[in-house]
Image (cartoon, rainbow, N blue to C red):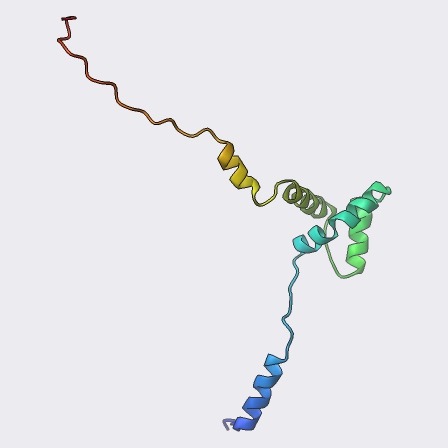
Length: 112
């Protein structure tokens, strides 16, 4: 038998959905980017990437040390190369020179 709902139930469900906070999903890459300074600090204190990966795993973030290294390197590149860097690179390239065609020579090809 098909189950049907009244308008009041529909209104309650709509209100419930509207009341839900936006759920932000964070990827491993984003998580490492956000923790990059703390992770680098621990590395300066002598901790290895494997030890740091173990701490992340203990907090439900499974990541290999090699992936952690890669994400940290990517985060460092992003910090060094700002979004406007591409525009600065384009602006620093030499612009093509306008070429004007040479005027045709008068006279024949035998030097007249």
